Image 1 (cartoon, helix red, strand yellow):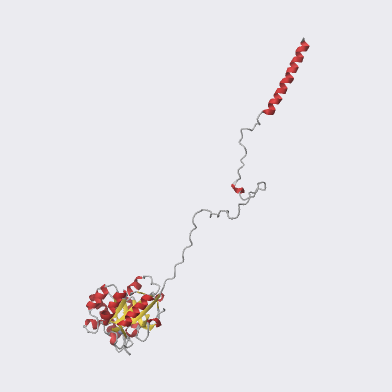
Image 2 (cartoon, helix red, strand yellow):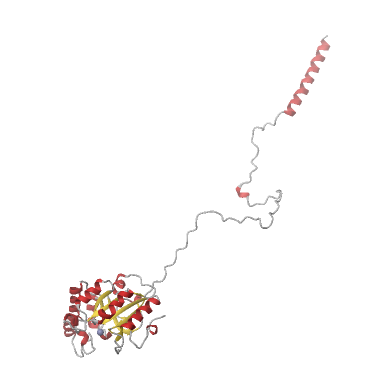
Length: 312
Ligand SMILES: [Zn+2]
């Protein structure tokens, strides 16, 4: 009886061990709760070809999508280099105007010819400028021209001014003020000067009060003249022209045209103190990079068409 019990116990133990072994073979692995390893490709490996990937067939020709540019912030544009400023100014010199048919000398022009000049300037892209624009530092247009009318003839108002209005062209008229002040019939009146100045098309400059007529000497010193005597003779004359224009037109002149183009070192300080722009009769184009004093000019006469003076 005891021998049978032991056998039964042994048999039961063997059975139990077999069952446990079977249980272990079907149980989940101990790490079943851990998520599977990340199979996504890290960014750093995007460009690395996967030797095990199956190559995709190339799309048929013509169906390839146009590659879009990679979106991103707009590139910072290169700063545009400043366009070079124009400093070239053509200054034309006129004096007296006469009706068509009147014979002209070098210092005269018919109204017909003046109209042709204004039309030619407009057709060739020229813009007229005034001394006040130069003084203000207003950038010059690409083709800049300044019309200067010397001496202050009444014809400037009677024949030239209507054409300036028609073409909206600007001009500076330099007065020999004693003619206007004395009421000389061939010269502008103060009323004419004021009317033209108020239009904005005309500025008035000085061409001396009376020194202009010193035997073509203008403001040059006389031979043997002392500096003291010179200053007592010329500087008050210049001051008178400034005072008369200021009084009658309401604007102090900033422009001075040297009579006969003759400069004088003894007048230099006074002129630079009282005027901002001066012109001579030296022929040529002005370069304002060199300043606004003693600018050259080009005389306009009947025998020389404008296209022989200015670039077309
Ligand atoms: Zn003159």
